[in-house]
Length: 450
Image (cartoon, rainbow, N blue to C red; front, side, top):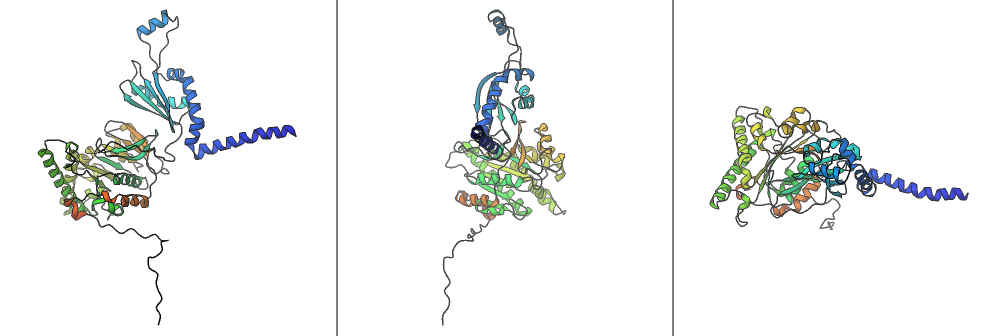
């Protein structure tokens, strides 16, 4: 009996610890990674690094001087050398390893072996990022960070920056829209792909910055009309959109005159006292601006396309940025579509219905990312592939944000909405905030008496 009691005393705590770790692995992967996954992976990486690099073909012959010293001074056999480890750092999602590449290796060699490294070290993914010439960083994630999106702690950017964290990358870092580096963007995705969720996160992030938001929603404003408290202008029909874009072109020309008067070439070189507020133009469904059902609508369509192309080509210098969304966007929309798409350097493509749409979004900047788009499952809305003109791409997923939460953020920061006289005719009417259902009335009815 005493032996059985001793076994129970030992087994019960072990079972409790094992059950707790199993629960943490399924429901709290960050906790499990910090307690178990990171020490195990760090040890496996340390003890198998040289052998793993050798079998993955990431070693090179040492220099002649080093080979001479090893052979004649150390009296050892000369063996190929792997990249030198500069730094190993653990995070809440994985490991960050900085490697100094020897002569003969390039970042593309390490990136090509990322899948083999992932299997060798037993991690979920390995991403290779070149931090500076000759140095790469291995960003290893210990679990699927896109399964339950949790954005990293936000760090405030420098004053005047237009940086909005929108989604989470598959390496655990935040995907941001930096309008000063990537001024214009294109977002594609089919119905129920998470494209609207991406837009809501983008609008909620922009609402907190001192910028003007211009909405173009030709579906009678059903998507963007709810954000009216933070919009400086809103167009809900194709005719209104054409007129609004024409006003924006005139505003662009006025701002260019201001730059010429101060002999500068960029909005951010102007003194703070005279610098106009930046404007972000949010187009909900770009195809509605290109479609013409009758001959008389073709003139309106041509004006609209011309205005958008002019804004995409020149407006960056005066602080006017385009954020275009749609389900498809290619030459089949008509004249000017391809020219406009070429100016939209930031690309985000959600799940699409055909490979041709993925080619429209990423085929011209990151061809190898097209296959990744076609493999996005329908049961993971919000997952997308983000690329830019540099050829780099990554998988991202936007956190869940309900329309009510986005509307509340817009109302909270409504005081930041700039009043631009030229856009006053397009200023949307703001509906009063609805009274909570459980709130008590201010006045109690009194029954009438004789």
